[in-house]
Amino acid sequence: MKKNIAIVVSSPMMVNFFLISQLNYLSQAFNVTLITGETDRHVALNTDKISDQIKVININMQRKISIFSDMTAFINLVKIFYKYKFDIVHSVSPKSGLLAQLAAFVSGIKIRIHTFTGQVWSSKTGVWRYVLKFIDSLIVRVSTTILVDSYSQRSFLMSEYILNHDNSKVLLNGSISGINDQKFSASLDTYQSFRSKLNLNNDSTIILFIGRLSIDKGVIDLLEAFKIVSVKLKNCYLVLVGPDEDNIVENYINKKDCESQILYFDYTDKPEYFMKASDVLCLPSFREGFGNVVLEAALCGVPAIVSEIYGLKDVVEKDVTATTFLPGNIDDLSIALFNILNNQAMRLEMGKQAHRRAKYLFSSKSINKELGQFYQRLLSLDT
Image 1 (cartoon, rainbow, N blue to C red):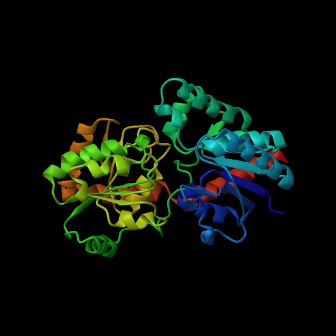
Image 2: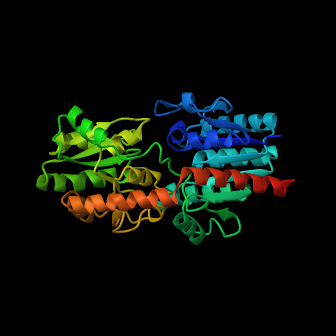
Image 3: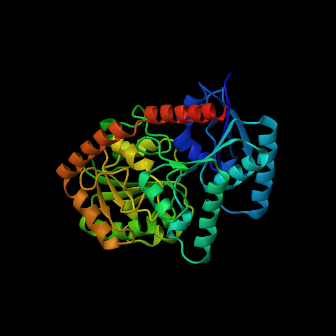
């Protein structure tokens, strides 16, 4: 008889980007229930790609702190857990981790797993750092097992006394769900047609940022660095793709002298389209749990420029698949952008090496299989 597994994620956007193929895989061996928020900045769950075998429960669970909404979500989770009596409750992301693990603990769920995908507090100071850090500590205390999506993040959490070797684990080489080499691959047709649609020259170079537009993601630094580079390289463009959480487009892009070289797309459920059209991916984050997007771009033959932080160290090989710079150093970022855009041979070789490494180390098939076996091991210990 199949065991009952509940996957709890506050953001449907995260499900759309990272978890659909994993959920579909797990549904072959388990009765899977997905519990998620209804929308995330008007982005709804892509239900038509989710297997009919998966039960989907939507609750009002917001990604950001909202006391009344959070209390309501907690009560609803307790009711759901009591009703369905899941064998495993597995949460992903901070908000779902706090609410789901507390609710599962109260409801008597024996196997409670949480996956850490990055720490909001790592780049905070003052009282908020301590509050958010305490929340992560609380999640660990009420969970029975912790997964971390990168080794460097796990080391950071151990150095901060949040985790230890016994209560935490990284699956294989890291990542939430690995990368799909069928979905992400290079395409000369897409590369050329993208430029044609936007009336760009065929030899124009494109820097891609894809993800949430927020200060923590380093987008403002990227804009400042691009302003420097665009003066020297008139035929380069910055493409920003993702929901604008901090009103960056309104407050920063429209005031820039180089705004004609910046293109913005709000949301896409086809990130591979933009990766296939780009020359380099830039992820200048101040905090990042892993950086799947870097590996997805790598499968498209696109090298990266990333900040030297935990989480991103795991997904690149410095000066082989990516160029790195110190977070917050705009001058270093602008130099890295100029060097890689101005040297096609280096860029193509780095893209080739990035593709090879990503495909070899971070296959979604391997990660999904390992997670399923991990569930089975925990269930066998519980019997």
